[in-house]
Image (cartoon, rainbow, N blue to C red; front, side):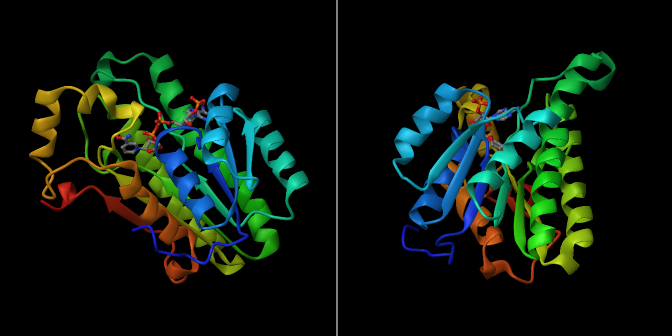
Length: 253
Ligand SMILES: NC(=O)c1ccc[n+]([C@@H]2O[C@H](COP(=O)([O-])OP(=O)(O)OC[C@H]3O[C@@H](n4cnc5c(N)ncnc54)[C@H](OP(=O)(O)O)[C@@H]3O)[C@@H](O)[C@H]2O)c1
């Protein structure tokens, strides 16, 4: 897939959680497409390692916890100091804690998962969409999960947060369409990253999961990258408010 181009040369793209996993692969592809890329994360050492790996003068890194309003406001203030605008926001940050059935959860678990997955996506979307609305153009792509579509064991609160991300996608798409801003999402099934290592590194569990996927394997981060770039580019100019499921057919059967 190395020769696909999306017309993103010179575009300013912000990738939250761009220091590892899917976000880092998205950043790699954006660099290959000659975009100007901003990545953010909580840990400076992860950002430094990612910047070294990306090895491009078109990459900037900023430390920010996306669930903290003040840090997100400061992140976007600094981005706007460095660049004249924002063309693309990829809301990639997400986290899960294995959670018991809802009656057995505690409120701290609920808050932590909702804060990062839903509040964080809202805060970054709000900040970027203010810039995009004023510019009269922009594309936001949210990274959701099939857990937002079907109730999955140990992922209850996470799934609720991701369902919220999908509704945020549709609400913002309808509100911002007239301003030239499109908002879409991708919803992967299991992808081979640190995040899901407890699942794919367990051979029995992994082969059980693979049996539920018609395409017969779990996703690699690159499987998610191209749908994200498609939604971020003019190739999807007439698509807004949609979620592409990147799950090897798991939810089709
Ligand atoms: N992997 C899967 O199986 C899978 C399946 C479906 C959906 N997804 C979704 O795909 C997205 C990416 O997942 P991944 O597997 O690539 O995750 P990952 O490997 O755990 O990477 C997460 C990235 O986000 C950053 N991050 C985490 N919390 C943050 C916060 N509060 N503020 C700022 N940065 C933060 C991390 O850097 P720091 O640790 O330095 O902050 C890292 O760069 C998530 O939205 C996830 O829900 C993943």
